[in-house]
Length: 220
View 1 (tube, helix red, strand yellow):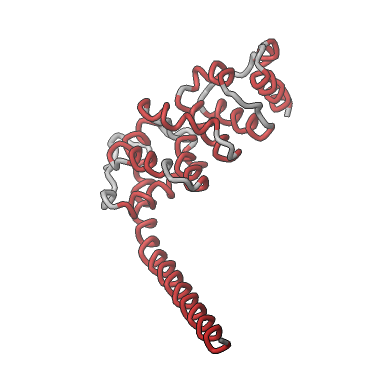
View 2 (cartoon, helix red, strand yellow):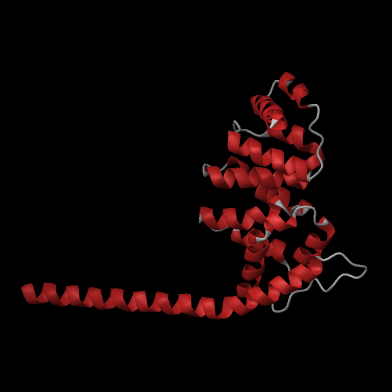
């Protein structure tokens, strides 16, 4: 009996060791191939975002492959702070010419909430296409607070001119963090916030809370 237990234990440890080795190999392989791809995509992305009379190619090489599309989406998400003020036409061309919208939609259909949040966060800076608003807008009702906030910001970014109307439709109370992010989004997209005091007269708690936060932030 003891020999059987010992043999089983040794077998499990051997299997665990093999799994760890496999994971290390995958990580090494990922780093080996993703590094050059990121460098190449970063250079091309920066060229696309440079002002000039002619627009460089917005078709990135090898994005017909899943691995490469993910690297480009990750790069766009990580560089999102640099995208402020960038003409959205250029970003939409990058998405359209590399089929990134469809890929993000596929990523959002996975059960992993972190994976959905990362994929959807790109649309906080790049307006999502009209055909995805219903599919991705439903995440505004997610139990996951981070995913819910990102989905709300992406939904507002799709039509910033209707920001206050869309806030009134939001089914959940806004947190101070959400208000601060919405404020930054509104400023970035040129939404007029000077009359924020009028928001306090709204019958919607989310709009009122946002109005109060706007008044505080404007005082800073």
